[in-house]
Amino acid sequence: MYPVLRVEAMKLKQGLLLPYALGLALFPLLDDIALLIPYFIAGFLFIVFSGDLWGTCQLLMSKPYKRSRLFLEISLSHLLLVSLLIAPFALLNPISALFAFFALPFLPLDYLTALMLKNSRKTMAVGVLVFLLLTFVPPGIVQIKAQEKAQATLGIKSLEDYEAKKEEYHALVLELEKRYSNYAFLSPGAQLELFARGVESGEGDALLRLSLTLVTFLALTVLVFLLFLRFEPGTFIKPSLPSLYVPFLPWWFGKELAGLWASRTFQALLVLLVLPVGRTLKAFVLLFLLPLASLEILSENPVLILSKPVGRNYLLRRLLVASLLFGISTPVVGFSYGVAFFLASLTFSMGLFTRRGALVLIPVLALLFAPAIGSGTASLTLAFLSVVPLSVSALRISRMDLSAWGGVE
Image 1 (cartoon, rainbow, N blue to C red):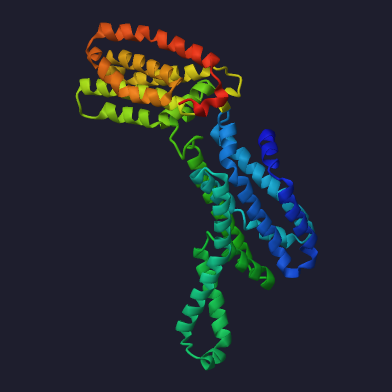
Image 2 (image 1 turned 180 degrees about the vertical axis):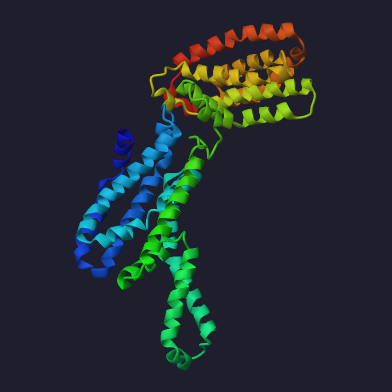
């Protein structure tokens, strides 16, 4: 966990440590309000850590990291760092650390926001909004609903009625607030308010509030973990079952398998294979899908991948892996797979020079080579001739300027 912990600790820059130091210095001077400082510090730190979850995943999930291990290390790193920063407040007042405990549900909520938005600024903005809403709004709603219910139950319609039933009214409001707050389990603010009352009065309700918060945190964490297992850098929640259940494959093959399993072209191929249409039509559609898959490979900036010791030929290896997996269509499309592989190699080679031009030429090439799908000899010949565009691709990859990848159009 040390590398992940070090990466996450680097996010604690001076801009964050200064407000933290200020809160720690003012803690002894703010009386009861000071108890809320650790709660707000923990909540905002979870937002900060989760804001860059997308970047952290893109950096680490491209390496030989198991998803479950990565999620565990990131979560434990965030919890450990926040706990270390809350520890000084616990020494000053142990109850304040328990107040910070109620911020736990915001960690998986912020993870969920990060996976959905894929943007650190938007994630932090939404995180702050959710934190403030769940902290302040539900307690106010619970209080209003409890008061309205108590007034209706006791028949309080005037100030005189209130003065006559004052004690009974307040007891009923308190009981209703506890009941309604049980339904507002997603609101740490509602649970925190009743926890503070329980601590002050010495009642056993405080333990219930801690339990509800912990159960909510665990349930949300399990939910986010299950979503995280289907998550791929580059998009939101993509299925990657093959990479999860075929652990003996090399890490780079598992990564390509996961990415292809999630690609639109491969999903379209799976649909095509089960459609009740003729074999010839399926073979013709394959002439579009496999070349499109080759361009889909080129749509991902390779700089991050090539920062690892895999070499530039990894780009070509990705095409071969994708073509191999598309080979599951061979029993259905027959020899036309050779034609599709040739077109994919040719499209990939052109895409290294101009991706837009290669995209425009895909339908032209598909129509031009469509007559060959019925000939085994032609398909085998074209499959053999794929060596030519693959060799051109290898030469181009060895010489091209990858720093200008975004400009290769």
